[in-house]
Image 1 (cartoon, rainbow, N blue to C red):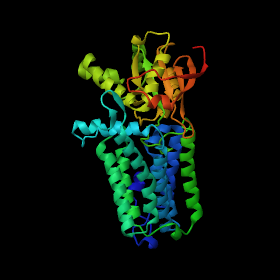
Image 2: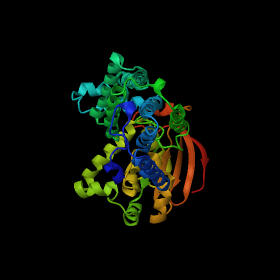
Image 3: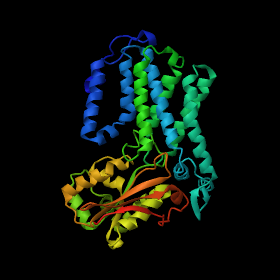
Image 4: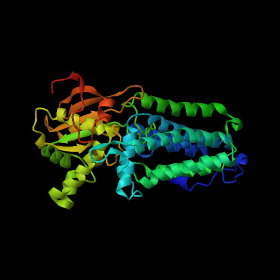
Length: 422
């Protein structure tokens, strides 16, 4: 990687009118191979590297060895798949909840009456209001359609208008400072709009010299996006381009203090569990405030209603007061050192790894795992797992039951499919 950073470009690219050139092909291939091997060893590294964006675009550099035009067009197509994939994932009933939560916390919207307009009837009805739904639908249309105009318009005012809209689109996300969003990605996408679609506006599919490699690359990327939306449990929401769509795999961990002590002793981590960190700085009482802010954020999204409903089932047969409810993302941050709002990082694999190191007793750690909604169904599957004895219940909840309830409701109807002795 260091060698690639400091290596001069190899040869000019006449088709693009540049004498700088590209990295040697062997360095590009080596970077991709190393990332692939590391990803097979540890999926966290691959996801943290944002392989679905940057690795895919790195592949397009290989096309530049054949023809510079093919490289630019391939990169444009990758951007197109990212935008359309992200827009497609927002064709659900969850996204308005994301908008109402994000925009009501937007630092640019200072007046309270504006913030409250994003809800149906503040404070009694905190479901998304008309304004949230309008913003959700308009932004989805922009992300779905404007990039297509940007791709097919080869310069002139259509390109200027489309590029301006997309730059404003990503600036809008940046300035909202939403929780858990890869803001660096939005900066990168703005750069891509200007460098690819404005700087090389005249290049399109008709200029491609070797269409087969481009077709294979786009088919693979698009295929992963489709598979990720149909089988969300199998594929990370990053690879499936389900960015901030409100439809994620999530977990909620119910942890006894005795289990937390075992985690602090058994896990080599840069930081202790969230509750312990907060208590150290703010004291036990004040530490509850940021903890409950986290609960509130989760509850404001549609799946929060299901998570807190299922938490009661996970702790059934035990005294709920004995548990500290902790979001899986925070457990993941301690145990793994990185999280990205992706339930794939704190699913049964992490539970088993922590059990191996900590030796929890039955009932010490109970976990709710809620899968994202497949694009072709209106249900979300769940699993309840005891870290020591394994899965003891699975079933599903209906999306309609979640979106019609308030953030404080924990009575979502549950459809149990299987129950095991735990």
